[in-house]
Amino acid sequence: MKNYLKFFALSLFVFLTFCQTTKTENGVVNLKTSNSDKNVSDSTQAETSYDKLKNELIKSYTDTIKIDTTFKRDFKLHVRYYCLFDSSLNIPAKYNWGNRKLVFRTHNFASRIQLYQEDHKVLDTVLTKSIFDPLLFTALIEYGVLNSPIYYYDKNRIFLGYDISIPLTDVGKRVYLIVDEGGNILISDKK
Image (cartoon, rainbow, N blue to C red; front, side, top):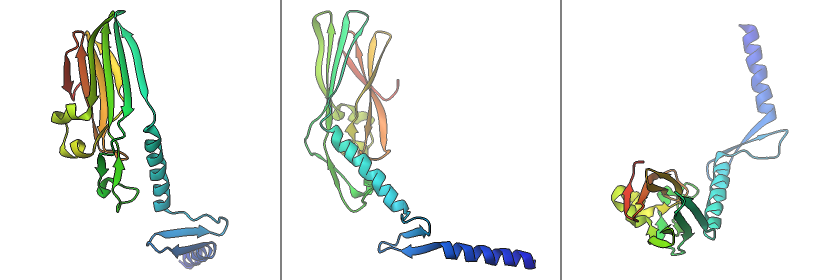
């Protein structure tokens, strides 16, 4: 028992000697070790991750994604996904994990979809998230954005899969625009 107490006392002494704790203004405890000048803080790391994601989102505003592909030799699909720069989405602070006090203003996105059979235009439409409103819950209708599509062809139909999500969160849903060879469209949340 005496050896156990000596070991515990020695361990406690070593810990207190080589590791200091300091409390910051915002109540986050930082650990500072004697062999490192860097403060370790979960909130600082979260802010860094948040800022990085936010900056990537803002940078994506100027990116245009294009899909040009051919199905069954004579069907050509052209999709152009782009930012509308409308500043119409005000994401509430409760979804803003980087700063729960600020509203995040962002833009909607759209896709222009064109389908050709040989040289005949079968479909030419601009798609926004509103077409999927019947499949979405309220928060996605109000704050969600249409993300860039994935696509595949199956049984004479083209499936364009879109994730609609609240920016910088994991709140979202996958939805599909299904286009048949006649240019008729159907929306679904199932493959």
